[in-house]
Amino acid sequence: ITLGNDAGDTVNFGTLDITGGAVTLTESSGSSIDNLSASSITLNSTGHITDTTNATISVTGTADLSVTDNTLYDIILGEGVSDSLALGNVRVDARDVDLTEQSSGTNFTGTNTVTRDLDVNATGAITDSTGTQLSIAGATVLNAGISAITLGGDVGDLTHFNTLDVTGGAI
View (spheres, rainbow, N blue to C red):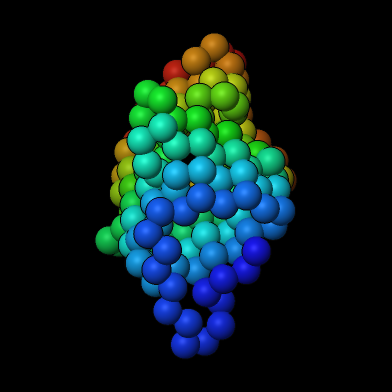
């Protein structure tokens, strides 16, 4: 599924309910996800990326999430008590990023830029892939419960946190 990628496209979906393999969406406004089941997603929004109450988001591969202006717009997913968020790998570019993965860990990949704060709560490990760049300008809060947090240990990794608060098993 590929929508909104051509020059001159104006795409405003409202609430997203998508089932597909590889999904690529460029939205001319903010994105609100109700249900998403995909092997991968590349989502670029001209506004906040959020989810609805009771949202179910499952991406088995990479979720590449970005906003057009990372000094104005946020990515907030999985924070609702009844939400379900499970991302295989994630790359983010936004002002504030809040990811609450109720049924999995979080693995960062690629170049990640957060111009204010990053807050990740996961039921599994918080890790990164080889060569991942994490640049967080504000506060970083990572909570993996009893699972491990392992970031910045691979060849080519570049990890920068302004302030860091971590909760996890092995760190």
